[in-house]
Structures are given as structure tokens and as C-alpha cells.
Length: 452
Length: 134
Image (cartoon, rainbow over all chains, first blue to last red; front, side, top):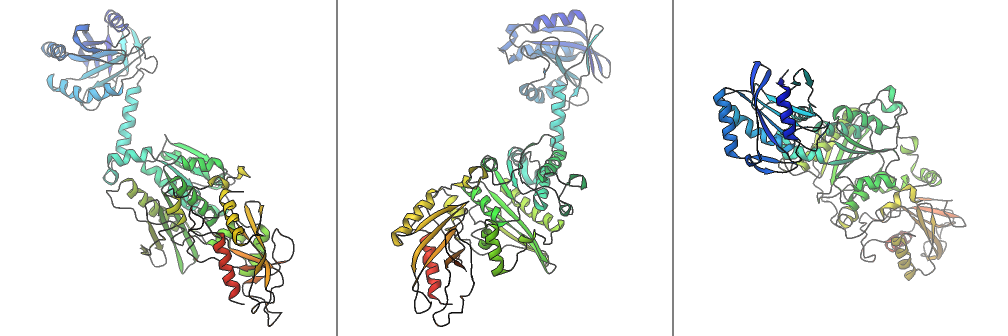
């Protein structure tokens, strides 16, 4: 528990020096009382002529001045403690990003010059607020100074800098095993990308979980459905306690348990709202994980009109002899669900039909599965496979060095294979050519219920 | 009326001047009061037809078309066409029958209405269907 002890007289002189409106610098020469306790023996207040630059937010000491200070410490066998002021800081006093950057070079240098002696640093704000770090065992790894003792009075540093450093170290450690996939740049992209997931059921909840573990923090969750008993075999993160809750709230909780600093926008009104369409517009990437082709076609139109890369995922298990799923990546110039004939016009027409029209169609085609409330088989492992396939292609989009994203993948679970269909999409597709390339404008907000 | 739909109506009126349009919920319904059909196949030489452009139009084509009720073959008045249901509900007065009908898969609408797929193409496609007979 590092502690720095300063006499009241030295402290008063430091405060007087730091009372100026511009950032000031001083050095405290210390001796160790024990391994973690350091007592100030001398102080040196750097005069204006010892500074190269001096302003409210920054000051820089001359090389000659610095050399003299280090030499003095060396000759007297002192431990060096730098101190500077942040004139406008109060209870949030902490070292600035440029201070922290400076430490990465300067501390190892002093450590070398003073033959492995610890190095200390204090930043002074107003009203006795301060923060302090100590490099005791390692010139690259600071520890938090717990107490700055002034006479008999104890001042507790804010500890803000150390907490930030810990958080950064945690982030670095957390993603150390996947940096080979994404690189630092890719990892930064994951932190910044804003992803909309439409449909937070069996596939969408898997996708959200995987993205959160990858390091994605900004989400838009769009779904109007609530958790039902029949969802509990596959809705990741849900339990009996969630019955009746919005699925987006289950997923929000799931993401929050993985990414504490997540930024999640929830749209409980579903896709057909102005808010949802606006949020798709404000996102960088969209995952579509819905059941109905009617919703898919509207989502496709939104993504193409707003030029948002879009991965559409579906799993299907009509019976035990033919189960699987498919992934289609729109926005990479190689087709979309519509021109790859993966959207059924009949199904779309059915979705947007009135009850009377559905009854008529039922006479011609027989009663459909959807009309009976979507009672087809649905299992977690198929959803997991398709979610992983989608997230994998998203990963290739984030880091193209891995390989180029594949636009269309079909999983045939009953055969145990993932295939890459070679059929060419329609080059004149209304969605991924005409709308995406801005050859025609979409009156997309007609889908918003508020418009009617 | 949506801009695209209004332009489609204008185009239809060029060839079918009596075309009427009616907005119902999210959809627009079009009616051509007197559509010529082959008298050598059917028990009529003309009939009213109508169809619906749903909210997803023009991304998806209309899915079926409706014809004035009572359409039968010329030779056998009791024989109904294939994939045909009667009665069928439309927002227009009278009795209607519904043909399940899909435009072929190359549906590519464009900004230039005439250069790409449009409702006139759809009308012509079901005109071809009526020429096929039962």
C-alpha cells in the first residue's frame, strides 16, 4: 500500500507553487522508510525558466533542468517524485492522457538512470484533491498510491488514474486471445461499431451474446415480442422468471452481463416504427434474425435504402430429415435474400394480407404453418450454428485480412455440411442494386405504423 | 397516394383509361372495368379485373388478380379455371373471383417506370394467363 509522507512545510510550499493559473511542476526527493513508504526530504519548485512551455493544460520541463534533477537524486540516493498541477481540476483530479503517455517513456528512463529505484508521481488539483501513482517493482506497471500523508493529516488520492489503467489492462487481457483474428485496429472497430439486431429470439439472442463477447458495445435491439413458455428451449439468457418480459430486455441483460460499459438502445415497438427505422439508419451494421419474410423484406428495403451492411439469418427444421439454415450477407455487392430467391413472395403477401384474404388463400393452398402460430420445430443448436456463421462473416467484414466475406452460406444439418451456393444473384435486383446504389429512392417510412 | 403508385396509375391509364384506384389500409387497389379476354376460351369477351399493390410494392409484385365473378369456360359453363377461387373479397362492389397468379421471377422495378417492372407489366402478365385458358 504505497504511501508518500510530506511535511506540512513542504506541502504548503507546493500548494503555493501550484496556486498559479498555469500548470506548474515540482520535484520531491524522497527516501524510503520501508518498501512502500516514502518520505519527502527535499522539494524543488521548477522556476519559469526551467519550463519550455507553460499553459493551463500543459507544461514541459527543459532537458537541462531534468538532467540536473535526476543527477541530484542520483548523487543523494533519493527516490524521485514528480509533482505537477492541474489548475482547473477538483474532485476528478487525475493524470491526463498525455501525462500517462509521457510516463510510458520517462519512467523507464529514470528507472534506468537511478538504477532501479522506484518512481513516484503526484498530480495536484484544487482544494487538496490529488491523484498519485508509484512504480515500485516495475517501470511499466504503476500502483495506486493509497495515502499522501501531510504531517499527521492523511489525504486519499482520487485513484481515478489507476482505475482507468486497470480497466485498460483488463480490456487488453480480455481480448488478448482474439487479437490474432482482429488485430488492435479490428478490436477498436468492434468497440465502436453500432449494431442493430432485428429479432431477439432463438438466433438473435445468440448473435447478441457472441457480439458482446467479441467486444461490441453499442447495440440497437428491435423486437416487439415477449417471452413465452415455448421460447425457453432456445432463447439465450432467458429463464422462467422472464415469462411475459420483452425479449429485448432479456438480451439487454445478457449483453450487460458480458459488457458492463455497453450502450444499448431498445425498440420494443418492433421494426414497423419510425424509431426502429431511424435506429437502423443510425447503425453501422444490421443483423436480421426474424421468422417472417414479410418483416425480412421491409428490413432488406431499410438496409438497402440506408446502405447498411446486413446479415440475414434463418434456421429451419421442417422435419428430422431436412434441418439446417442459411446466411445471406447484403451490402458487399453480391446479392441479397430477394435476388437469391430466399424470400417467398407468397409468404410476404400472406404476411401483409387481411384476415379475410388469408382465409381465402387458405382455401386454395391449405392452412399454413404461420396461420397456426408458427409451431414448426426450432432447436437451439441450429440457431447457434447459424448465429456463429453470421458472426463469423461479420468478423471477416471487420477484418478483411482474414478473408473476403462470403455472401451466401447454406447449412445442411441433416448432412452435416456447410455449402457455398454458386448461383449468380440477379444483377438488376431492385433492393441490392437499384436501392443500394441510390438509383431509386425508397419511401421507406410508409412501413412505420405511426404514419397510418 | 404514394408517388410511385400515382405514377403507376398514370401509366395504366394510358392503356386502360378507365382504371380506378382505391387506397385501403396499407394497400392500393386498382380496377380496370372492362378488360378484354378471349371469347373463344371464356364465356365472356370482357370483364372487370382488379388487383392489389401491397405496402411492399414495388419491391415485391402483386401476388394475384381478381376478375368479375362468373368466369367459366365457353364450352362448359360449370368448369372453373385452375387456381381460381370464387367468391373472393375485394374493396369493389360486385362478385369477384380470385386467380392465384405470380409475375415471373424477373421483377426489377427501376426509377424509370417504363424501363423496369411495373403494374402495367403485371396486367399484361395476367392478360397472358387469361389467354392460356383454363
